[in-house]
Length: 505
Image (cartoon, rainbow, N blue to C red; front, side, top):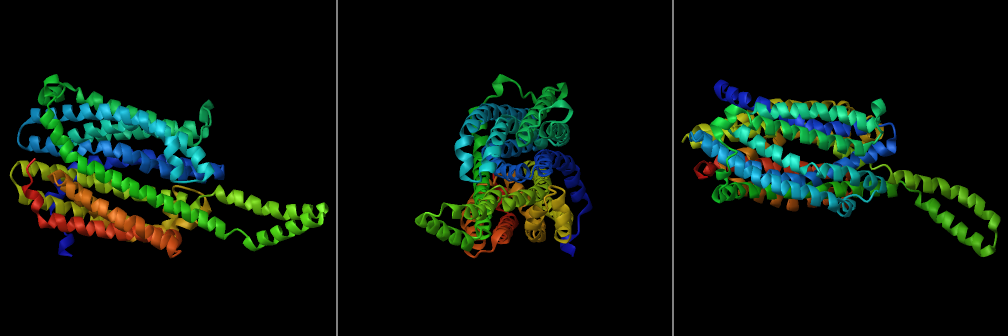
């Protein structure tokens, strides 16, 4: 029990810095959660279930591109905090200028090219016609927001690095409120607005994301910020600084691509299980009999016999069509991921605060204190997010019902959510160790671990358990649990090893 006891001063420092980040990142996550909840509660069941599944495919695609570019935040925050800890505020400002130069150029390029390529890429991950029809325009609208995502996270990394974590919190709360209002108007067609369904969710999200970016930009122009950090001078552009940002950020960006690629393949396997379940429920014996009788009727020239055959075949065809319109496991997996994202973002927020404290204390020449902050953050997450996982184990239907009122989706997902809840505290610990290593400048190790585990553990085991061994959705999520336990254990060992204390950036 002593291992779980908190140090009052250390925990206060972590919570003080992390609380605004938690609120900000949870608010930012709520933008995506609002999409799932509102689409999940649409009256049209076909649009609702397929729409949730479409969002589930879109977000990993969006994050694979936007998250790769947003990894500039890893280098930006690490260098900003290190220069701040060294007492060089203008050095922090120089880091921001170079980070934003890359963010705006590559973010604009990715937004345009990504939106154009979506119609060719999206169908690979789910062949369900309703999911594809709803998902392509939704994904295109989301990709137009990659620029705002990358720029916003660049500003966030700077403000987090200098300890002003409340700036992004403010922008995220405003962005979330705007998104909820616009989503309700566009999805359901309230107050004279056109009823746009899933597409309306994408439009609302993109508009809100640019509003959030605008708030971050406006904050950076506050006179006291300009006077202290002098970040908007052209002379700040510096190739060595930009190279150092990219050097520190690239492993994190590649790790993001690996993670999102793994999740996309994970979702593809879930979609395959949906198809398996549909085929398994189809009356094959009846079809065989109908086929034999049809051939006999045609051979004997008895056209009148075709009418009862047709009446027997139509319900089967109707069942076939209905099955293709109900990707229950894909929708359920998206809901579980959304529930997990509350833990993801809370842990990422605590990890972001921890990365700042670690980098600042390394800059001040206090590696032992930096390490203590890392372990303290893990204890905090264990006590808080571990409790959330416990509640998910006890009341899975309650949590699932927050996101969808479709009984079939809830029934298909309840046991998988219980499984995930058991390891929720390990999800949190793994993410905090990851951010701590990022803050220390050891992003390469994280990239190697993510690559290895996604393509030797998560994806192969999802196929083995879910499809080959026919364990279905529960088998797929069992592979995710093996991945989480492995990731958390390896990163904990690396942090405990302590070599990150001596990395120079």
